[in-house]
Length: 307
Image (cartoon, rainbow, N blue to C red; front, side, top):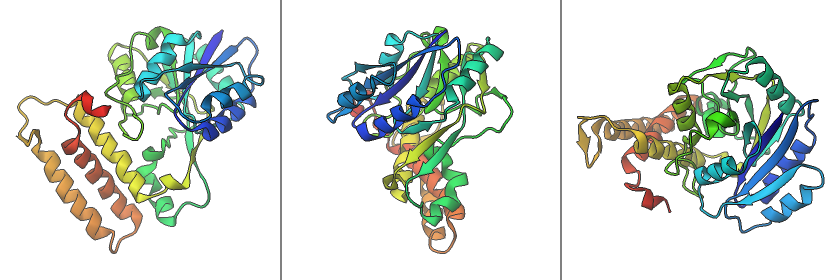
């Protein structure tokens, strides 16, 4: 069996090198062949040189997708991949040595499953601020943190894995393209491109499986350990929600749902007041809800605004 490990990257050559070096330590089980496909999404740094440097240690090849956008990069990877499964990881993760073997075992144990996901553990550079440590149970998804436990449970619409550690069988992946209106686009933190695909697969009757042993660590730089980052991330969630949300007959104000305006104002007020006296596990859920609501009401109107 041949599988494709796909990494989409843009101007993060140092992080990419760290990720590729972690892949160089992966155990490749007998009977499995693999390729690593790195999609350079319009980088201006030393991304291509980094890939070339690691080509002697890894079965890696590069692909350039000049259209800036994570969904465009993902679609380019799907078109070029040769494997029976595509194993998605981000360019800022560290893969455990048994990661590939765990997924290989899962393919054999659940041959009917169309997609798989595994644990993602945030690895903070330096010491994270105490407020973030306390708030993490509420805002962990901003760092792609996920752990569904030690049992290989079936994946449902409420337990979808993150794209930083996701596997999709190619037969199904090629039937469901990633939506360019979703997914990160340079500094614009749109999201949800992988969940839209997985939700479509579930609607078509496909199944997914959690793989507890397929563990990776997600490196979180100091710049992301801030309230400002959380605000940007959850506002991007709101942007993505607005793009695919349509409720006929819903009451609106300035073209956006009235409830979203109310949610934005009330949750923002709750966040600002409670941050004055309460610990972060109290005010962070309000920050999260306010930011999503602000994103929903302020999202750009057309895909042209994404460029």
